[in-house]
Image (cartoon, rainbow, N blue to C red; front, side, top):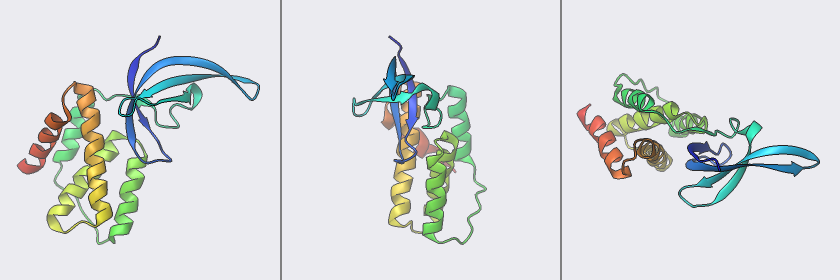
Length: 164
């Protein structure tokens, strides 16, 4: 049995989930033999199968390292963020596109930008939800990577923003 933690990004359903690869199976699909990762989504305990040759296309990747966590915190600390005068819905689409990439760095930029923006103006309902989504995604992944509680990670991130 194969077991490793990974991050699964559903491009069609915006969201990042932590999953565990519990097995690799071969199945006959339309007369072709294919290999699949069998994943267990940690939040829901649901199992899904992802074709091995399609894993990167759906955003399957390893949980981030401590070095990558430090890089995320560096992104969150950046203060020189320039906001143009875009409408909230145009900004929202840009932020959503970044989240859909599955890149933890892009999600960190969304969190940073929305957090900084909310200190200057009131966020729209969609932007507030996006801020919560970005925060949750970052907190979940760092908590899994470090073996910490989500509350510990959330406090560490809040401290970064309060210090700046």
